[in-house]
Length: 504
Ligand SMILES: [Zn+2]
Ligand SMILES: [Zn+2]
Image (cartoon, rainbow, N blue to C red):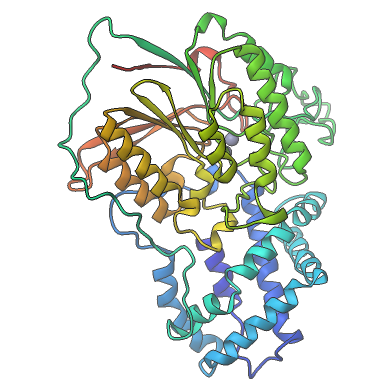
């Protein structure tokens, strides 16, 4: 994406002849990575909903970043004077950089460059810069080493496809079954007296464990109204008891009040809960903090909704570092196992065994809440422009879209309808992911009855059009407003969360 591309353009390495193979070669690598890390942090600390406009995710061939880079690189070759760089020297250079970066002290050196840049660019207060760099540096160096700095990727970009293959964020296609698409059948209202299911739609609760009434709602940190925000000047009031119109999340009592007040709006047959449980204090969250938010809020939802089945989806704030969702091929301590295992345990009362199995692998699942209805919960972090793990490979991460096609085809064969729930709406995804999702929605327009997402914190919808004329609307995704007030919003009242869906 442009952010990573910009850093690449600004500091491409010079030829092996001009630099040493080890120490001097690592210096631009460190600066390069430090800058990228600083930019990634800027993204994590900012309101990404403002920074990123929705993708133009319509069914036209994606003309994205890789094509542009391939056009720019030959010109840069002249500007930076690496025209004489040979393929073996290039690969030797990047192998040396990688070997250097594997050493722990180099992670710290990248981190110290990033801290300096974070301070210099005034991305956040110094304490926040320090803290978030330490949170991100290890994962970022690992990703950067395995993707952009891999000898094949880097030299493929710099010297062309004869030397390697630059595959970062390039376009890709899932395959659709050969079964012909049935003729489009416009939806018709259910017959009078047809059974109706009532579904509660909850999203973006963002519980702040450290919320403290009276603290400064307009502090310098990325999240305020909390322990550490300081007191406001005498001329301004402090954070309110229930919440605040500012860059603040919610205390537990507000979520408790919201959930306990659902009675008059109910009863509900089931709940769609589309993620983002923890607060926006992304600069110092530990795995323990995230798991406490998961279990505390899950227990609260169970307490107030009792036996009603709740179907969750994974939000981008569930992990730490925020947006960090390595695809399943990443194993060991870097993997998301710590999170998915905890989710499977917390949500076991609501999900059948097969759903728990795929949840543990990739954070997504499918189940049948009623005969005739299939519910699919997608892990939209695999489409996310902020998920830096996708730099390693962004092609249908975890095979999720191909799995979705299989689910939809099976539903079509059975004559079932399908609901999709997820966190990040499809219009906010990496372009190639969005484009493939669009193709799937268009192919299964008769089967896909509704889609529900969150993440933007506001009440809106996305419309999908036919591939041929781009003028016939064929599906809609509903985006619910957040429970949290972040940033400067009204907390959502229970009545406005309810959705009535009819099934035939
Ligand atoms: Zn959110
Ligand atoms: Zn979100």
